[in-house]
Image (cartoon, rainbow over all chains, first blue to last red; front, side, top):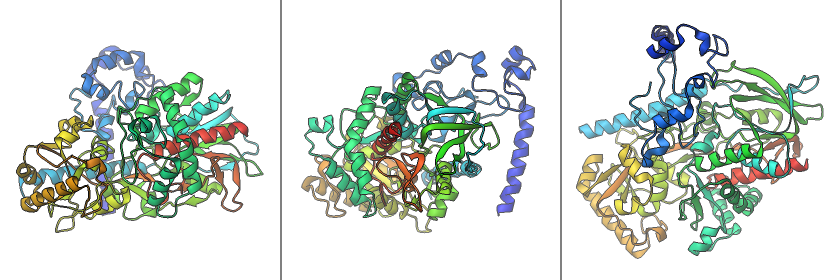
Length: 116
Length: 509
């Protein structure tokens, strides 16, 4: 049983890394960044982008405004949320080369239809 | 099996999956920390006070040490975000002799709070520590007021407490405290470092903790990321690293019943390596097998979610029912262990988990801000009749109706003949349609065990019984304070008071 799930995990892992290469980049980022990986990978190509990498272009306050919710649900704003305010590093929820789940879904059933 | 039931079952399994996933993540992060000699270490940096962990204990210590005149205080947090498990906790704060108790005419004292806790601790709680925390709890509450925390304008009486003594933040979450405290820390000049994972102590020949290793630029779950740094801490190192509820291996080593089936309310970082490293150094392990599951959690959402606070508020005027029998099966405000055990025993005829339901009158439940949310996010339901309710959860209607009738007699008489529930807070609150209902299933919530500390927050050595020089601990990482079962809302005062205490001790060191 253990062996079987290990095989499955390995298969899944290789599938994920393959798809990572296949997904490559978002269209709108291609327009701006092109193929200059270092634009985002400011800590070296083999490392994750720093927590400041995305905010070179994206303004946290603007993002918070764009995803603002009604007064009743105001703390469900992923870019200004109850638990961590505006401090959550982007890569907790977003990946350029892989799809991620919003971090809120660890505990909550909120819908983020436009999340990617 | 009806369609509805299939859905329920699926949601339940989904909940399990989320729990197992989180557990898998934790298990992939082995405890790598190893302490070593400080001799000949080339220090990358020297700080005055080092605090490992950024929950209630770490933040309170940061503020208090700055207020006492510290110049160079640093908080190191292994996750990418600050607040630890405290940032997702329920935001419930118990203290005796508070302004709101005076206003509501509640007769309470340090002694009374200690006695309640000793009872839940079933004879093995640390009375000196409980008394120290209770004596300073109002000071800690004041620290949150000063930092800007806001609380609901009413007190709550939680399970196991003999009086109403619990404040709760208006956002019904610990973040209502950690966010203001974090801001206050920074305002006072505390330096905060995220992605900084503790990797072991650096100890001199006399056994004194001189400093520690930290992995800066660490990505959770990827052990070789980041750069190792050696940091000297002049006044000491405060371990405020929390519990190990997310580490299924470690918790099952202590209590094999706490499989991934039980789920977990904690933040993913609660994996326990800071605590285990203190044991390697010689700290005394206490009460590790006493791990508490929250009886107010729901299998229909992950983690602490929305239901937990909803049910904590509603238990005093609600009825918990076994779906198989349609009857009550516990005192809804007994202490946490009593209730968690009773819920885990609710199973179908094949022995599979059959989460019980909590039935509340909508008129009473709606006073809590989460009620709207649990309905909106499909983790709770509103029904206009008993028939509708019974059908949804496949509960036998006749016994359920009889149970409601019987329970309402207890509301009237103030005497629960079935389970001896204290009906004070249920006065006048009959179980009547329309109803709101959530499902209950325990989740691992709090580790009572940890390292032994004294009332100065010094960590004691296993063989000498004396404090390990340079080492302090506060919060959930410490053990023995609560004994068998921690009462709800008693962790925040403990974390904050012991964090403040550690700061006071270190500033004298």
